[in-house]
Length: 190
Image (cartoon, rainbow, N blue to C red; front, side):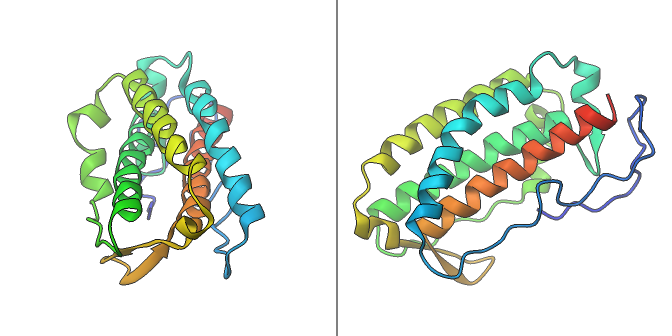
């Protein structure tokens, strides 16, 4: 996700409102160059942990706090993006597991982040959507055979195939990336 800074203090009234938010608070994605099942197993364990971590990230936050900005999105928009991207990823997974090299549909995350559910909706609903989607995805992952990890789907935006093993690692990082953004807001702006 590209997150450009327009006004880092917009919508912030808490401590550290003028502190520049880092682009990659969890570090940039380190793309593996070859299939590494130890890395994949670690990513699967991360998925399991993320269910509780997403909930904890927004637990106890008021509406005003949820509307605190991290660069160009609010915490509320970030948690909704986590849910939205997980649903998209889940569909890509299902296609990858049931079809031969399916082409997946990209989605404009910035437009999705500006829909009413993401800008004003109950963050708890996004957390629930994330939780049940990951639970269902893990049911599939746990039953995968070794050859299934080499199945692929094609992403037209990037003009490349993504093997299942790679996408597991990438998506575990993706959620951690956004959780780190929320943690940064909690530590520096609330």
